[in-house]
Image 1 (spheres, helix red, strand yellow):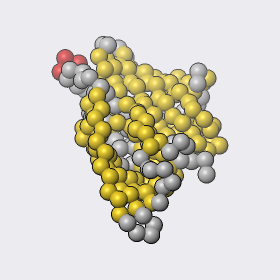
Image 2 (cartoon, one colour):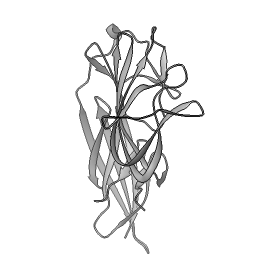
Image 3 (tube, rainbow, N blue to C red):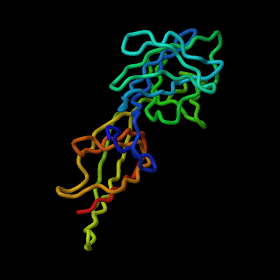
Image 4 (cartoon, one colour):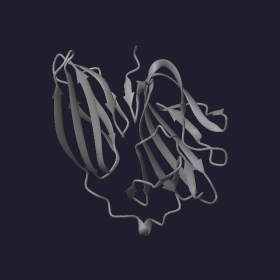
Amino acid sequence: ADCPWMFDGGSARECIWPGRLALEMRSRGMSFSFEVEVFQQQAMVPLPGSHGSWPMSLMVNATRAPVLDREGVPHVLLDKGQHIIQGQFQWSRRPSSLSIPDAIALVTMTEQGRSTSPERRGGRIVLGRDVAATPVKQRNALGIEVFRKLSDGVPMTLETRVVLTVSGEPREVEVGRLAWPDTEIMAINSPLPARIEDNGNLRVQLLAGRHTVLVTSRG
């Protein structure tokens, strides 16, 4: 199957990989740019917004695209491949929050030249915070600790525990290969969105904090 294994508290093959959603506040609205990769021939991809704050002027890879309404949630139909989605929200008065699809983990917001990671509450991000109260931007840093436990048996199993200590902005990184040569990954338990690349490397969408990824493989 073309769709890779995805891990975010569970494991399954998923055909849509949402990347970073970048929001930029403007005087009477907000613009957004969203990266997404589709692994099947076509897919309906959810967008930020809802009735009352509907995305407008949508562009996919610099070409206009219609916003489709699926039960009150804006979507766009995408072909297989990598896409950059851009659009705008317009309002006379800024709403207190904006609906964001749960699948989008990496969200940054810029206002008056300052970039922050907005607060999320139940599928929405908070827009009402005063810029002056925005915390100081932290330096991007990543600490990685790896612990392995080998269990004899038929087949042999290897448990790899990866502890990620993250500071700074939400971002996406390729951690590297976690399974030993001639072993097969059987399960991954990850609190962060993650996927296995074709080369066997683990790609993770990082959020600030301390996170433990548990990988089980067998020989």
